[in-house]
Amino acid sequence: MISHLIKVGGDWTTSLTISSLAFCGMVSILILLLTIIFILYRAKHITVNKPNRKFDKNGPDVIIIGSGVGGSAIATVLARDGRKVTVIERDMKEPDRIVGELLQPGGVQALIKLGLSDSIEGLDAHKIKGYVIHNLEDKAEVIVPYPKQELNEIVKITSGSAFHHGRFIMALREQAKMEPNVTFIEGTASKLVEDNGVVVGVQYKAKDTDDSHTIYAPLTFVVDGCFSKFRKELVKAQVTVTSHFVGLLMDDCPQTVSNHAEIVLTHPSPVLIYQISSDCTRVLVDVRGLMPKNIKDHLLDSVCPQLPEHIQKPFQDSVINGRVRSMPNSFLPPSPIERPGVLVLGDAYNMRHPLTGGGMSVCLNDVAIWRELLKSIPDLSDYETVIKMLRVFHL
Image (cartoon, rainbow, N blue to C red; front, top):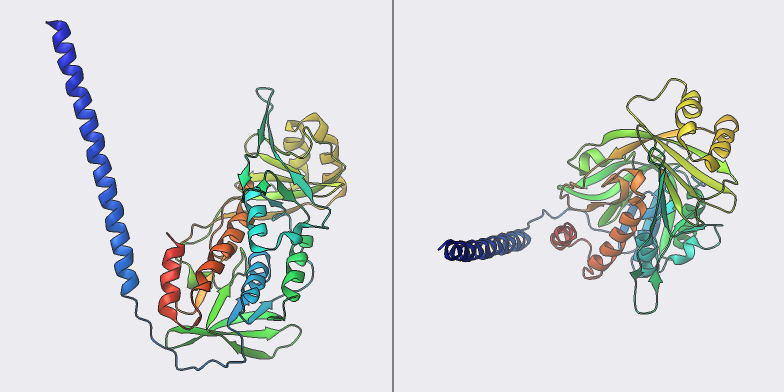
């Protein structure tokens, strides 16, 4: 009797579980279908006012504000696709930053896909094959290698690349300059020019002058970085600062495992260490809350004793004799405003904590996506279609 009840109960439970799973699956499929229908409905019902301005056939097809990682990359590939591109960059000198120096395997893969892999050659770059995670409290070390990523049957990406940020930017700019369809303007973009609700150009001031100029094109990319001047009018979300990175360069620092970055789980927040050239190693100390009044004392007294022994001496030397710099660790989820005539890319549009090392990889993959989307739009003043592609991009 009892065994019979158990059997009946078990059958009933199994039946209920399967039915419940089937029901949940049907609901999920229904929600997905409704979402797709809604997106397609929206895509079919896009109306954009046409600007009064007629674009000069000899003028640019695309204006790009900013010539960092994303701006330089998209300028090059759009030019190779036959677009005439004008890039407005505030300062063409080699930039000097403490982040943007570790390109994950996915970013290397994107560079290859874009035909820009030469940009990491000849930089004295350092291969990164994974991470070593130090938990000194438990006296444990964990080696986390990168998984293999297949670009195709022949090319397998198994490592990232670390380098001096400025060298990488200059290499990307050189790639863009070699394209006959790319024109560089050294100046500061000051205003997006509108006509009947459509962005039709950019007002800028050339470097070392107070003269304002205006250049017109059907499409403008805003790629002016984490301190974007135009973000407030193009992105819904606000930037939040979660902490600060304090950056140093260490000379001739030994590694626990060759070609591996190191993460040290210090208290209260981690330290990231990776070699960026044959003799230079970047160290980034995450500082939560308010910055200490005397940052060098904080680094020497609170951080240094928590580091692995092989790092402590180079770290001390870099604090005492080197440059100690900081930058905010900002977070910005992607939340664009659909505005005809303008698109946003890179840190101006989407930021995650630099500890992930994912910013450049995300940006380069976004460039690859937009390149493919724009190939299907011969006339970039077809704003309805550009907005449809923007919605596809956000899927």
